[in-house]
Amino acid sequence: MLPRLTRKKYLVAATAVAVVATGGIAFAYWTSTGSGNGTATTGTSTPWQVVVTDTAPVTALTPGGPSDDYSVAVTNNSDGHQSLNGLAVVLDSTSNEANCPVAANYTASSVAFTAGDLAAGGSTTGTFTISMNNLATSQDPCKDVTVNFHVAAS
Image (cartoon, rainbow, N blue to C red):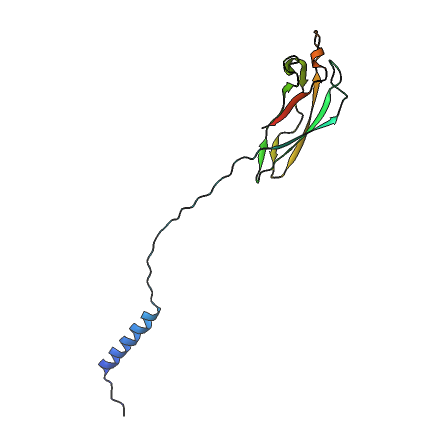
């Protein structure tokens, strides 16, 4: 036989059951804030690959004679985009610079090309000419010389 529960004992038992039941579904939490730091590293520009080709070789430059035509191909060898803003032909010297100075005896045209953004691996081309000036003085020291030049990309 079970012991008889009084009204007071039922109330205590019911309260205990209610506390356990609601305690099982009640929860609490803390709020917080935080932050983290990181870094990213940028690269640098990569030199352009510049290839010059003599597209219409003349036998030899002569005073006031035909120009020599060249093409130039520029390639972006970097991993990202680079902006090609300029191409310039620089006449460096002749193989007889002391007697046939390049600046007085030869002229290079501007490079005809389209400036702009080149994606990684992208390329563009341009053209220019080199000619021998026709001076009022003898240019015999310029016979059989080599004209040294380069194309600067920026």
